[in-house]
Amino acid sequence: MDNPSRSERSRNAALDAAITIVTRDGPGRLTLDAIARESGLSKGGVMHQFRTKEAVLRALLEQQMAHFEEFSNRYIEKVRGTTDQPELSAQIATLREAISTPRAGAFALLAAMNENPELMAMPRDVDIKKVALMKAEASDPDLALLRWAAARGLLLSSLFGMLSLTEAERDRLFERLLDDSKWTAMEQGATEAAKPAKTTAARTESSPPAGARAAKPASARKRG
Image (cartoon, rainbow, N blue to C red):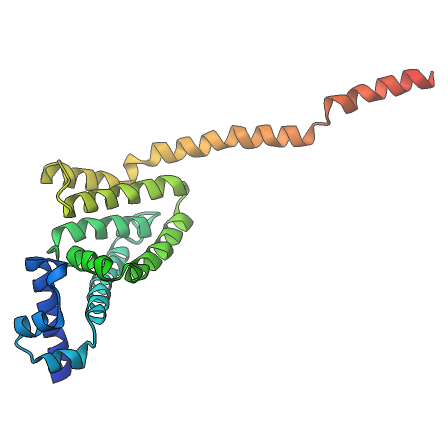
């Protein structure tokens, strides 16, 4: 909307203030009073938008999730037709994008976990759906999930200051995770390895037990 209403402006101002507070001062400093001071709104104005701190945190989570969902959808459209696993590519690219954006989203998640761990059910439910889509499109679902989990590990390590790689090294790893051609041999290997097992199982099912083969000659001798 080009001309947001006064209520929308107040809501956005309150959320911007909340992100600033969480990023600058930490999740424990986020209060409705602090949001009012930071945004320039009255406390009554803040409470008109958000009755509780939990409501602010929920809105922050929803805002971050909507932002990255939009990025993911645009990426899928861009790579559709160039990869057999557009959902996996989009998820890896989204995780890389999350590293490049301000850390407000990560701090919002930390604040949510600190305030109410049940709020994490929101992103967790989204993850469950994304995982199902990645598995459905993959010829080797385990390998697809391994690539996705590696990308997530890079994001979390970076956000929490635990990544000992240079930015260039990190970017190279993301490029490799995104490059399907680097994983084709492993996918083909898994497919080929599954074939002998299936063939052996089929032969076992079609062959009668050894005891059954031996029983016929024995019964024949008895009749003689």
